[in-house]
Length: 407
Image (cartoon, rainbow, N blue to C red; front, side, top):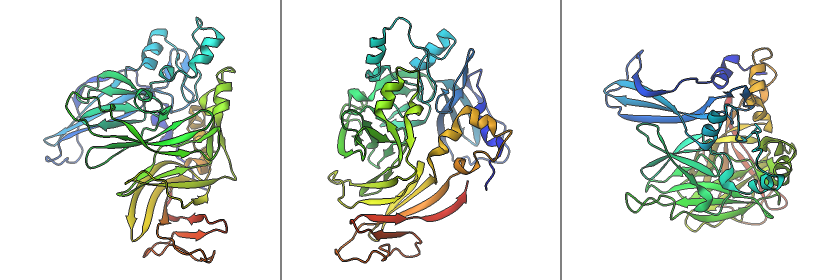
């Protein structure tokens, strides 16, 4: 069994008590090429404690932005907290006010029970603590999370400029933070909608037509994928894109929409609505980019959990998809603050669910004939160890090639 070093948890257990809003120059060990010029901006959890309150999960900490600027072989660093509504309310009250993924906020005592129920469906009242990623929409930078509200920031000063509610521009409840940008500047993303029928939507945001234009005004849905479970959504954090296709993996870690509604009354959290189906499969939805059509071929595999896609490309009639996958859905549980603190006393406890492996799935696109033997490997890609078999019901069962050990 792999053992996770407790030091891996340290960055997630620290709170930044002071911003570095003015750039400071770093001391170099080694050399940075003088041709390297520009900046790298990242965002993540920066504060896990507010007053006497403590966030429960690393997805909950208040967003802290980091900026590394490179010029003439030198590097400068600066940081600022995102001035989200979640952050400002917490600082004013000196406690956690806004509910996050696994942390329940303090409800507004001025609201009746009916007003609190109504707020569940008011997407503008959900968290705007965008701590996952920075996305460029044309020439504008936005801090994003797996939510409905994102923040425009100044990439030079890290100033928080404007909150944008995505549901005002595209018909989704939430969108993920790992979008793709095409060569022409078009941004593609995946959103999801919940209601009587849960769906996933592929979103398209073309580049701005003028400098002062709104980068979201021409946002559109290019494909809607029905959820395999009517009142449940698969947890999703990223997706794949190639020259001609989108790849969306529906995995057996589900979010129960009725449970989210119920937890709103019983002081539960969004994380309490997650359920891992140990007998469930993953389904690979493939969408053609030219017309937004979902391919009829059903691709499935043994169930796994993933956060991040590594790469996706096409080769000789195959769609190749590389991902960092976990064998079970307990990976999210290992990211609770208490679980990370336990690594210092029992590093083996979460070792197996904590680590991921890079695996490659190969989806054959050119499948012809109804009388294909079920034991025939449909992957004909040279030097590939991945496999694909037609099942009796007509679906294609995928077996991945393992690219790395655990890590």
